[in-house]
Image 1: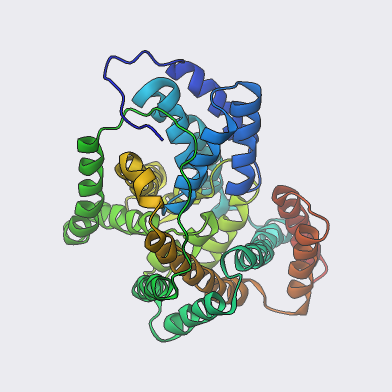
Image 2: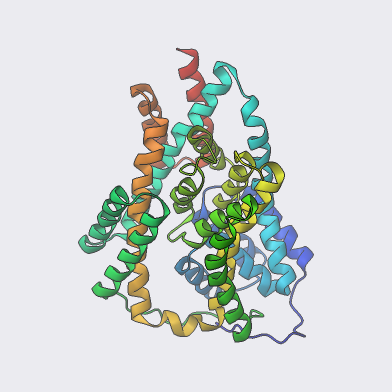
Length: 403
């Protein structure tokens, strides 16, 4: 993959063209990051022919290797390749804003929802999260824990979290998983794929990496100075540790908001359920959380800070590794390390499935029956997540009306 580009390069498209293409994707891309990558391929590789399949596959491999929101990182890079840095910004804004605005409106109006219909629908949104996370754990187990050793790493991650809850336990579990993967040595390296010209020099990449780690160190020091810095620190740290898919952001955000008392557990679960019904990246759940934070800043300001902070680390890492990707991914040790880290992530998400998801949403056998029905719709009937969310909301209303 070629990542050097002259500052006078004439890009093949414009930021306006990129914005229009990604606004369409932001309004129609339901189903999570894997589905998003399929939508991207149909629209940008097949229909618009911005790049070929080989180059697209290479870019997807990079973004799935890194922490962060994979589909948004792919979109950011595609926008950059099409129209430079303005194109990257246009792709991010157009793909992210539709779902972020919908969730912001939901956050501002959810407190006014009362009565059996409203509370039943909100309870259905909490219940559907059980089915969606269970589906994610099942799928990630098959792909990221294909053997006994990596299955054991996932279980070890749950054990770590049982004794060291919160963000510290998650970091410890990921470090332990990465070290175990390195010891297993299952990595073989990946052959060099296609080429996408991106305007990132080695100096710019190093600047991005320095910024990534500097913010990880400095934001906790600044968090005691003002609540705004504490919000940015919490959401930045969550975005920096998301390995293995968008759903993994759930336990990280729970640890940063619910465990700290900033957001109530019921509010958290209802918002997560609502996030499944909107198109675009799951990371926009951060906009909802920023809006409903107990301490200020909240509302529009809190949503904006949380949204930008949770996406920033993934983009800094993407820019930081672009010039070095070809040589790094050929190293078997690097692949082994990531295999172990990803196996640990399965355990982290599995622990979140139990608490706070299951314990917070399921209060009796009727709730469990609705969650099980949603799981079957997802797994056996292959129903789109947004359809299942509607079914769960209606089911929650029916349970509430039946007493």
